[in-house]
Amino acid sequence: MRGAARRPGTDPGHVAGPYAGADGVEEEQLGVLRADALVDRDADADVVAVADRGDRAGVDTKPGRQAGGQPRSASSVRRCPSRRPSNADPGTRLAPLKQLAAMVPPPGAAPASPARLVYTDEDGQAVGSALVREITVGRPPGTVTYRVEGPRLAGSVVVGPYRHSHDPVPTGISVQYGTSAGAGHHRDDEPVVNGVRLRGGWDHSSAGPVTPSSPPTLPRPSRAEEPFSQPVPDATKNRWWAVVRALAAHYSERPDNLALRQAAARARAPQALDATRQTLDKLTEEKTRLTATVNRLREHLNGALALLP
Image (tube, rainbow, N blue to C red):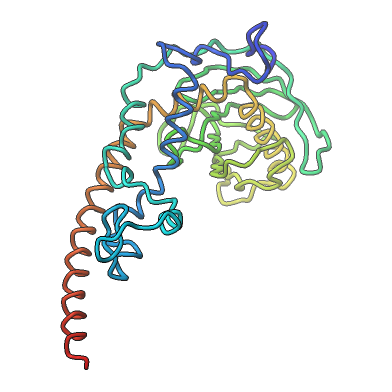
């Protein structure tokens, strides 16, 4: 499957697929958006801060000035390399999300040809193989729906970026067992392993690598049929974990993986934009309250100091 997704003649490290460079948006530009937004996440501390260290020490907080209006030395400025005045501007924080939200999503990629996928245990030993078909790519944005069939194994999973990621371009992995939701907790085509229908999923928030043998344990699946309260046998659980790891690793290594994540970022941007605005509004209110508290405490301190001999 990996080879089928790569365009002939492209460099192996190049992101291929219908998402790459679509609508005049170069991947480099989206990479810059991601880098800028990740740096600007650190601005929360600047938004809520009411005074920097120099302010608390009685130093004038205007850039380049010390107490008494004297120019600040270069060495004193270098002590605070993380101070970026633009970070305090909510517009700077929101700009990457606004650009992502304004982008027009490209069409989805065509599913690759069926391929056989070998899955392993946590020690890297092959324990089986399954025929894997890509049912849909990019529906929902950023995801791939796989249908797996093998000995004592059949069902569908949806693999995509971590669904709770706070990064502008989401990292991590989320795996959903079964496809579209039905009544209650039921999903269509939930996997059946060793005769047991499984329900659940896996959210991997870390940006660290996922391999066919790592992580060794995943959230334990539950039974999708009676008897619901009976635990899933270890042999069934371990077999399914091996399949899920192999599919997650395949998704992570796709040549169009970055493009899929960017598609998810575009789809999530409007909601993330609203959430960021609400957070900044709350932080601005808190900043106002804390500023008033600091000013009141400074007046009390100055009054106490005036009484000292």
